[in-house]
Image (cartoon, rainbow, N blue to C red; front, side, top):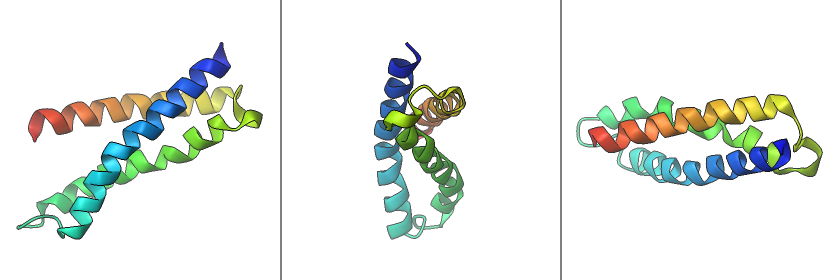
Length: 91
C-alpha cells in the first residue's frame, strides 16, 4: 500500500512541477515583467522544483517503500497544492 501511495504522490509532484516550470521559464525570459516584480515569485517556484529530487527517487524500485521519502513527498504535495491555489486565485 505504501508503494502505490508513494508512486502516486511522486507522479503528482512531477506533473505539478510542469506547471511551475512554465512559470519559472516565463519569469526568467521576461526578466520578471515590466517592473521586475515577477522575480519575487522565483523562490517559491524554485522550492517546488526541489521536490522533484525525492519524487524521482521514490519512483526507483529501491526506494519505493521508504517512509522518509513518503513524508517528504507528502509535504511537497501539500506545498504545491497551496501554491497552485494561491497562484490561481491571485493571478
